[in-house]
Image (cartoon, rainbow, N blue to C red; front, side, top):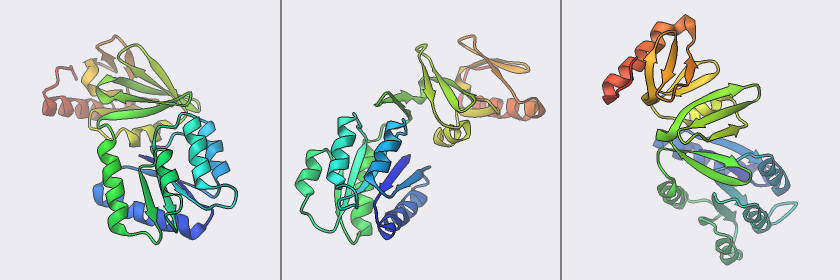
Amino acid sequence: MNIAVCDSNELGRSSIILFLHKYFSNKSISYEISEFKSGENLLHEFDAEKYFDLIFLDIYMNDVLGIEVAQSLRSRNYRGDIIFAAASDKFAVAGYEVGASAYLLKPHSAKKFNAALDKILKWQRPDTYNIMQRGNMICVPYNEILYVESSNSKCMLHRTNDRNYVIYKRLRDIEAELCDGRFLRCHQSYIVNMNFIMHTGKEFTLSTGDVILIRQRDLNEIKQRCFDYLEKTGGSGAC
């Protein structure tokens, strides 16, 4: 889960990040936090195709009101969750008018903070990978991901419906986000969905005919991991 914390005050950011660390550690959920000192920096990162599942916005910041940042995000077709943090409820109505998922008053209460995150996580679609494409979020079900390959500074996700998506992330970051046993990092340039493997030699051949490279120095270990997974899940692939 990718999270942005936007607050011009360092203590304000640190407080939210501490709550987030405690929450996600207890839930054993993979997450990544990006800090922003200004709304302008956050919007710049968003325009550069950085997608966030959840954005924390302070109401009063040095350059612009958090409400105005939220309005700009929504005008850019951001459909993720926004949580406002404020010292008063003065902008609570305005917050919900821009589709805020929660409006938390400072100082933060662990009970209310956790309740807000619990509510948001219930809305998150399970077993899907979110990809930002031209300002829109695409939710790709895990069972439709064939494989992901890296190429220089970007990656390509291959889907069962013959659609491919360019992702401007490192393969190791995508590997961490695809926190599911069906995905195997079999090569420095490939992550494969083992449910689609039909034949194994020195390479994996998928049911689509795609050929996926295997790291040769770890060939036997990787093939064994594939075999163990398919045996455990009752898969029909051939490892």
